[in-house]
Amino acid sequence: MGTTASQLGKDLLSEYQRFSELLSKEDRNLTSVPMEKVLSLPELKSNPFRKRICHVFSTSDMKDGSLTFEDFLDLLSAFSDSATLEIKSHYAFRIFDFDDDGTLDGGDLEKLVNCLTGETEDSRLTPEEMRQLISNILEESDIDKDGTVNLSEFQHVISRSPDFVSSFKIVL
Image (cartoon, rainbow, N blue to C red; front, side, top):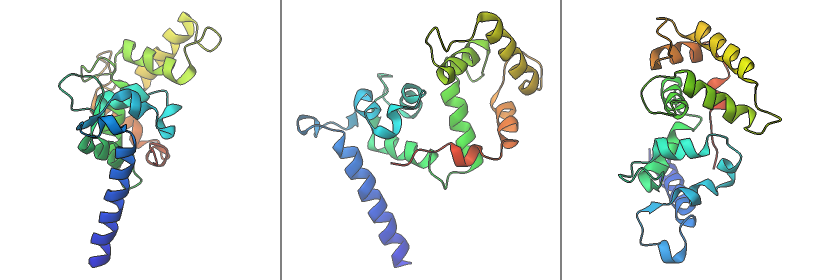
């Protein structure tokens, strides 16, 4: 029993040290880290959803993507190896729901695809390719045929992807 508590304390201390490193000496009295600093973490730098991740986990009233230590812990927990499929799929859904309306519609899916393929002229899909891809996604995922993917439909699709849990992670 003492070993578990000691390990938890060491993990929490390590995560707090990592969080504190994001604050400059002048900012040490702040209770949250600005999104720009969080985005500088090497583990997030190349993630195409890095800004959405900050916005989803931020509890800031200013909606600026800044993270408190508690927000930072929530982020680490959701992306950890020990997080369940339900937790990971819930946060993935929220990250992909760009307009925060509780569904993935054509606009969300287009932004999702653009994040994954890149938004340069060379990598961007043609309008016809995008339309076809979104149509295919909705055909496969939209169980109630309302033109959007809700959380339960998303979780149903994710449950058929065996490597989702192991690939949806960030290790700091």
